[in-house]
Image 1 (spheres, helix red, strand yellow):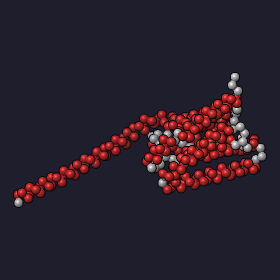
Image 2 (cartoon, rainbow, N blue to C red; image 1 turned 180 degrees about the vertical axis):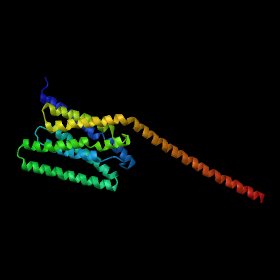
Image 3 (tube, helix red, strand yellow; image 1 turned 135 degrees about the vertical axis):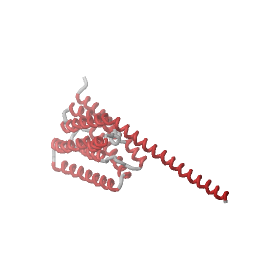
Image 4 (cartoon, rainbow, N blue to C red; image 1 turned 30 degrees about the vertical axis):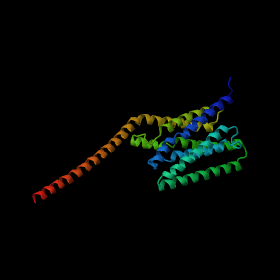
Length: 260
């Protein structure tokens, strides 16, 4: 029979894999941003929320805060590095106003995490107290990470288009939430169960919206492309019509010369 520790480790490794997929799921979005050299209507909010979430979970998983949480540290350490890359790309291709805003938020997040680490490690003298304090902070930021696409969900409802709500990010969020909820239920850890359970619900909501507005999104894209093609054809026709009068005027001039 498989022990609970073994089962927890297996689920934790699976959670690492799914979380890595979650962190890498925005890659197609950033490839598109890189090709267009602009962030367009994409929001930096999900990446900023994920960054601070990863940093605080790295703090939670440290041996001096919450022992036997190596799998929490490994994946969130990787996530921190990946999110920094996304944010750097976002800053490069954003306009000046967005760029300044994102840089300020990142600086605030780093200062906040550093302050929490210093205060917890100096004022709380047992791992139980440290786990409770950092765990509560983790719950807040984990929920923020999962709820961050709510701003995009509002845009989806308003425009009836899921063009700017990446499907794979929502799908990965659901898998990630379910995996870490299971991991925390084996050896009950409320600081992991609560945010990931809620995160699963948020992800389900995003996928429901995607299913509802998928067809209308395709229709809007097709209409936009159709208008672009019509506009292009009009330019070509107008160009030809401009040439014809000029030819006619030349013929008229030639007739007048012959008559003279």
